[in-house]
Length: 314
Image (cartoon, rainbow, N blue to C red; front, side):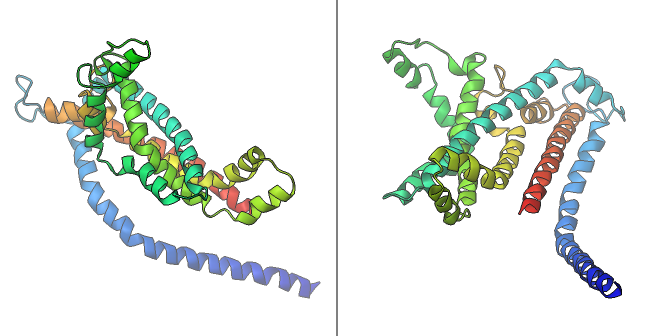
C-alpha cells in the first residue's frame, strides 16, 4: 500500500513542478512585450480619458480655452445623443453582416484553394489580390462603380430589366449595402487565408479512413472538416470582428458617414478633429474603446473555452 501511494504521488509532483517552471518561463518571456505595450498605450489612453472629463472647443463660443473639469458630463452628452446610438447600430449591423458573409465566402475560397488541380497557384494569387489592395483604393473603386453617371452597375441592372436610376451612395440603406459589399470583397480573402492554414494541417489519413467507412463528401465536411477547423475559424472571427468594429477609412472615403454609414470611429473623428470639440470627441473615443474591449473580452472567453475543450478532447 505504501509503495502504491508513493508511485501515485511522485509523478503528480513532478508534473506540478514542471508546470510552475514553464509558467515562470512564459511570464519572463512575455514580460518585455507587455511592458512595451503598456508603455506605448498607457499615455494616449490615459490622456484621452483625462480629456474626456474636461470641456474644450474652439467652435463653441465661450469655450475657446479649457473650461475646467466636467466629470462625466461629456459621457452623459454622448450617451444621450441619438447620433451615438445610430453609430452603434451602424457599426454592429455592418460588423455582423460583413463578418458573416466573409466567413461563408472565405470558407468556399479556402476549400477551392485547398483542392489539388492544375493552375492552383494562379487561382490562389487571383483570389488574394483584393486583400492586397489598399482600403482607400478599394473605396474609390467601388464608389466609381456605383456612381449613377460613371459606374456600370446601373447600366448592368438596366440591361437585365431592373431599375437603373438608383443613387446607391446617396440613399439608405443602399449606401450601407455598398459599404458591406466593398468590405466583403476586400477582406474575404484574408478570412480564406486563415481557414486555408487550418485546412492544411488536417491529416489526409482521416479523410481516407472516412472514405473507407463509406462517408459521403457532405459527411466528411460536417463531421471532420468543420470540427477540426474550429480553432482556425474562431481566430479568423476574432481578427475580422475587431477590425470591423473599428472601421473608419471605408465609410470616410465612400460617403463621409452620410446616409446611415457613420460608424463609431468615424463619429469620434468628426467630433474631435473636424468639429474640434475635443472633450466630447475624447469621450466618444473612450466609449468606442470600451465597446471594442468588451467584445474582445467576450471573444477571448468564448474562444479560450472552446480551444481548451478541444485540447482536452485530444
